[in-house]
Image 1 (cartoon, rainbow, N blue to C red):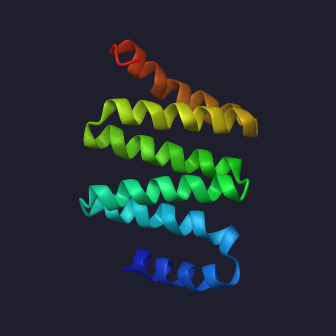
Image 2 (image 1 turned 180 degrees about the horizontal axis):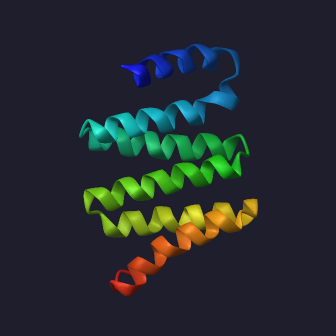
Image 3 (image 1 turned 90 degrees about the vertical axis):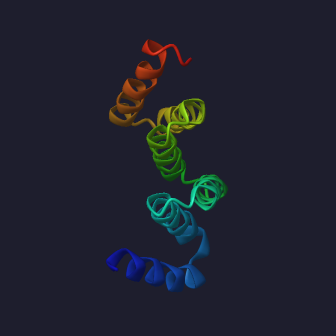
Length: 118
């Protein structure tokens, strides 16, 4: 219920500052749809969040959307898709310059390599 209220609040804020809010709203909606087993809608919203963040030049938020999409696909058992999203997140965090996030994503990528999914 709280998350739904936050989504409603973000929708109002989006009308005032679309480029600052859209990717966050889409990411939160993707997470909600993923929890609700609405796979196609979740994937569409993850991709929309990534595109919105990229358009707004929010490289760190683009990385976050890629990272969350990677974890979603990993949880669903879609290893190849997860790998692609984690690679994109790694590139975003590298461009952003966050060593902590680069290291965290690298650990995820290393799992794929050790499992032979590269």
